[in-house]
Length: 265
Ligand SMILES: NC(=O)C1=CN([C@@H]2O[C@H](COP(=O)(O)OP(=O)(O)OC[C@H]3O[C@@H](n4cnc5c(N)ncnc54)[C@H](OP(=O)(O)O)[C@@H]3O)[C@@H](O)[C@H]2O)C=CC1
Ligand SMILES: O=C(O)C1=N[C@H](C(=O)O)C[C@H](O)C1
Image 1 (cartoon, rainbow, N blue to C red):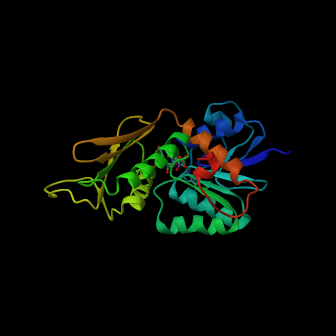
Image 2 (image 1 turned 180 degrees about the vertical axis):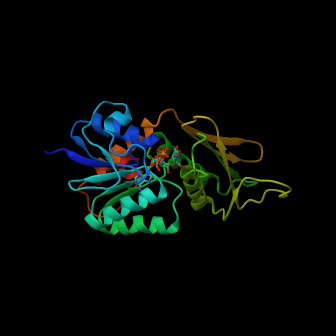
Image 3 (image 1 turned 45 degrees about the vertical axis):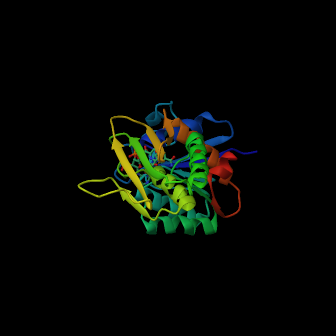
């Protein structure tokens, strides 16, 4: 069987470099394109060298070319748009990992899923996706808890992160609200907001040094507390999941697929 030809979008970024390292290190997979921003200082440089894993023979460019079996996108909202438009034009399967997207950008991903197979997830890690299932189960079990259960989501990321709260934190909140019905999503608290109502989920975003990514979901009951915490120690946890997702979508029927599908959760 011929190698799976992967295009990496956001190639010179923190995540793109780790995805390139995974792609180059895997049997049955080839790096077909490495796309970065139009003004990237890394244009024309070798993608493997920039990733720190030795020459790959693929230059970083600002455009996609031919012969791509799947795109893995960890870039910026405009980078995601470019990747999704290419995916739509050529029916190339897409792994969309960029967060902080607008409704229009999400609609573009939905458009791609009509043409090809798409995994769109705010977090590609096994541990985080398993923790999401646990949070959903906990929320279902606690929805009628005597005295009610207050839910707060706290996330910690590196100082360079541009969106807040993280896409993962928002997804944790969405999953909890699907079970418990909270309609009021509050970002931080200040002043004198008064006693906490039950229909609220609070989000708190910490930005600290080089923290890779941490999420904590707390269920506060009267008399006891449950906390779920998941910590990513290296970006490889996301890159490994994204490469598994690319293998999963390649050659599959059009539609949206989840990381639970990919990871068998
Ligand atoms: N789903 C998941 O599991 C995870 C998602 N993420 C998300 O991935 C995204 C990237 O994170 P991170 O790697 O830390 O960010 P970085 O800022 O390190 O990297 C983003 C890269 O995208 C490049 N870029 C800009 N425009 C385009 C374009 N049109 N096409 C292709 N690339 C482009 C940037 O180039 P330039 O600097 O020249 O603009 C930069 O090199 C974020 O949204 C983050 O939240 C991160 C980790 C895990
Ligand atoms: O920007 C990051 O680094 C991360 N972003 C994703 C998010 O916003 O949820 C996933 C992960 O937490 C790392």
